[in-house]
Figure 1 (cartoon, rainbow, N blue to C red):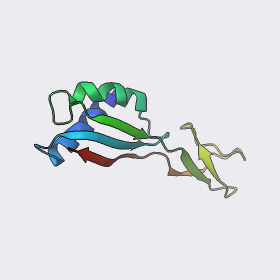
Figure 2: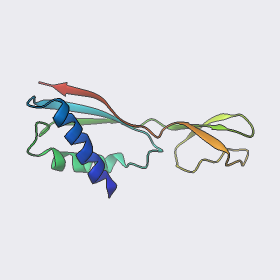
Figure 3: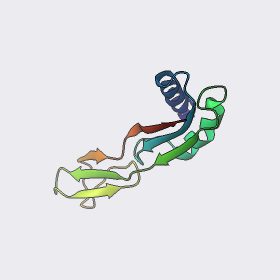
Length: 109
């Protein structure tokens, strides 16, 4: 479950950046193609944040869909699964979006 390590890294980064300040909310962007399960991050967040300035903070997660561009037919299309295949049958696609993992904002009190 690598989401535990990812969540720990997020909490550590926010706690370090906002040292000594109580954090009341964190907003993340986790793309559907990132390989990170948002529900697992939600589950781990409260556990990992306990005893830090993020304890009790609200966690909001945006989950943008993936987008890809086919190198064969040139069509741009949405992906919700990490199998980059175009409708034309080509696997020669470039991922344009959806693999993000970002801290978008932090709310402090």
